[in-house]
Amino acid sequence: MNALGTAILIVFIGTYLVISTEKVNRTGMSLLGMAIAGIVLWIASTMGIPGGTDFAHYAEQIEWSTILFVLSMMIIVAVAGASGMFQYIALTLSRPSGGDHKRLFITFLVFVFGISLFFDTVSTMLIMAPLTIEVCKALDIDFKPFLICESITCNFSSIPSIVGAVPNLVIAQATNLNAGFLFICFMPLSIILFLVTLPLFLRWYKSSFGVTEQYRVEAVFDIDPTVMIKSRRDFYAAVIAIAVLVIGFSLGPTFGLEPPLIALGIAAFMLLLSHERANEFLTKVGWDTVFFLVGLFGLVVALEITGLIHELSLAIENFIGDDAVVATVFMVWIPAMLSAFLDNLPVSAVLSPIALQFASVSPVIPLALVFAVNIGGYIFTPLGSPANMIAIAYSEGEHDPISFAEFVKLGTTAGIIHLTIGSLWLLGIGVLLGG
Image (tube, rainbow, N blue to C red; front, side, top):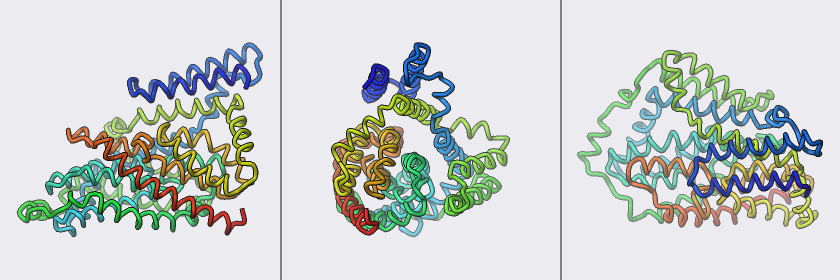
């Protein structure tokens, strides 16, 4: 490793060490890390050191399409939520439960499983967390088990879909992973994981479930769901927009239309329809997350420019060799462990180019990385996935915080089971594909 590579690696590690202390703003730190990396590369360029580059060239290599996708999905959720759409869905979904906590719990998890195929994990929890808390408080139910299980479910339910999680999109773009191939390989596995995990959740929280008093049930469910709609025009516009979004995500790849372009067009359309409130909706966008991604991708680009990712791939190649079984197991368990502590997005960004190189050893290697980073988001710590942190943030906002220890116990138990099942599944696919 040359001096430039060493300097960039120090910047990368230093940035994440500081972020991991949770004593600084992670967005500011990631942008500062990117700025420092840019200065280091610029100095190297002016000194004629190989690998150095100017900032314009450096910045244009960032995954802007992924950032636009995240931004667009946040706009869509903000506009749809303001129409009363999600409150309407909450009341409609809750009514058949009749106040039975277990039935409501299962209904919400099935709903999360379904929408996770079309919304990224952040958007899913931005929809589900306030919706869940509102319903649970109305029915006098402890919302924490719901939020914990919903965040875990949305992480593993997102695996079959390129748009189900931002890491999926990053990996797919870097490895040229086909959306249809991903869905066919992982949809059966996702269903199996749900069927295995649901009984675990129900047993884990058995003592928390009961039945709400009849007078409270009647008070809540006598409300007509349509009164939740704040603006019929915005409501129907949101319904149409999300229907087009789902169809676009499903059929777009067939015509070469990428998910970020589809999401951007729909987000722009929704803002135009609500022009008098557009600025209000834009203030609800998680700009901290957007700029955190900018800084993160900037740091990863610096690693690529200096050849550090290539050197890491050579080191892994020396360890794996050409053994498809070892490569598959390695790409499931190691990224999952890293994702638990580093956040699954940087792990995806760093390891995607390596997964592409090892696809020649086995065609399931990119699939293994997708699986690993999603499952790794909830083992050992809740810090590995932004969806978990949204659930925790909403619980803290209600002054009834989710216990980190409780999340870790359930998340790690479920995660180890999922990693084991997924490893066997991927090895089986590898045999079928002859890799």
